[in-house]
Image (cartoon, rainbow, N blue to C red):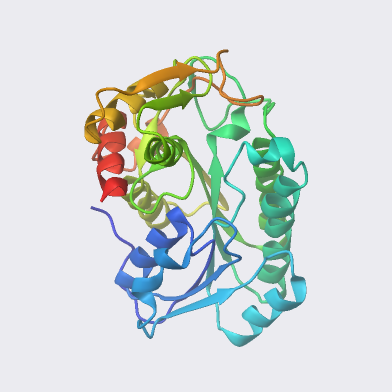
Length: 320
């Protein structure tokens, strides 16, 4: 287990603090002695994810949409922030199909506003949650220096554009960044994704389960606790101007296997699975990918859970 170094005087801004990953990150930072200022617009995040922190004097939660520059400016004026963990985003990739502005606004514009605030307040560190979606559909094990990159979703393109802006701001304004490219992340407090979707579908109808695509989509699933360990290790052990890392397990799990694990865990032997067809779950979905994680392994990190183990644990956590 890798934690952030114990400190007592550092204030971290966590955007997306009421979300799935952001709320766990807030927990980890608080346990290391950080004071945490969380901001969230509660579009995907929920109060239940941070309810346990309401009596922690080192935690402040602010309801805020990061596109609101005036209110964001107030946050930086009211708190002596030392580091920004920018994890707020529209992480519902499919939503970009019906709302083609949401990724531009929630992923790119928010990042630009955060970067402007960092410069205006002389902050020198940003940790950014990026994604495998920036790579698009690539064959083989994908490394951090892969390119050129052609994303296939609005989500992926907005995150890639955000990375580009972070790069420029780092070079122009003496900022250091840690960019972590996540695979599919699972664990307690899920707010979206295939496990979340399947659980809700089966609670509504325990006899039928719709599976998008052909069910053969096969991707690495990383447990959120392993992700947080990776973030802490990358932040503590690297010190370049821009530090970019793929994070994930070396194996993968198919959508049909996830369905079968869940059906077994819910003791629903009569479930009929039916598929919408096609190799992808939706336009822009990447059905298969594999990370080259040698770079982060050289730091000494490896996940505690395989992809299948992470999925099974996340199912158990979210059925409690």
